[in-house]
Image (tube, rainbow, N blue to C red):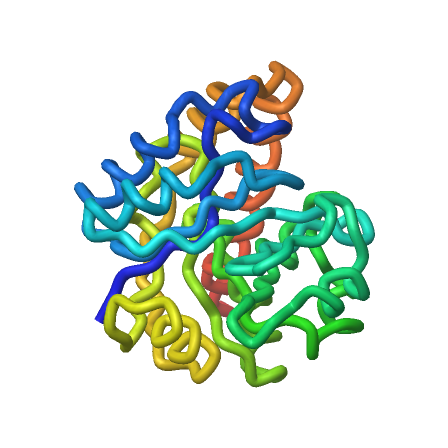
Length: 248
């Protein structure tokens, strides 16, 4: 059995590197500390690390799969273990041309209310994906975005993998995937495709979310929007559990 998390960003990320502070080595060290032993670093539109990272991970008992978070037709897609990665900004057709039996394509946060969620693209190209992500960026009151992803995966008979979408090291170890396989690249990939895995997840608190927004350079407007959204969720939740008044 291995513990895997396939969605991480580092300080060399060409887009998120402006606020991500940890290096590849620091990420690997933290993963070891929380018990993870399969990782994929998925920087936006690039693979900004070399073979030394893979070697260092192996020395620490971690299997590192090369990865990238590509922008595909305007949406984010995780590409893992490609021999030759397509351009960082590409199409599903570009991915299909370069995908080999050992490569994986995962749909990250597909139904989150953000511009980069896959939405209809996932349904249109479902045969091109190997798994759907259950994102660690959620609270108990916003779990439904992940529940929708899990529901889609069930209908499409696709595995669900837990990923943290790490931008800060405190995120590691809260959401990940237990895979029934030895610590070998081919075995891990085959087990994932066959669905021999289990989701492990703990939601973030709203303080975690606000901490994430603030540390990632979020604006005052973004923080205010977050609080407004929380209040709307709380009102809907309260209304749904308030018992009806008994008739006299």
